Length: 130
Image (tube, rainbow, N blue to C red; front, side, top):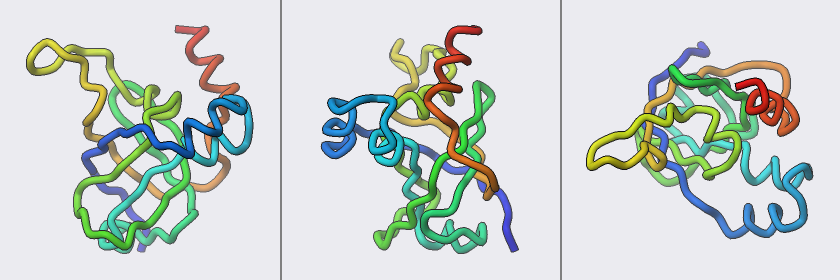
């Protein structure tokens, strides 16, 4: 049975993402390397998720649809996401402990979904409208 789960999301920069970014942020390759969330296998199973399925990530600041990547390495309750326009849609811009913005770690609700990955064009429109 599919369900939602609250997870801690940790952002990172990846070499493959940087290569694709150099080729163009509007490319399918950049989206494929950036609009994803790596989940613990047990967490994915509890939500009824399989590898490469779509998930909706929501915080009080925003929401995006990305692709789930199911990890073989155990890290229950923690998910990893590239630092990208997709992860930035989930950040509040609030200052956290020590006076730093919460860029590297935040909580998000993860829910299996249908449809398509949020496009970079939609993200750009959201930014323009803000």
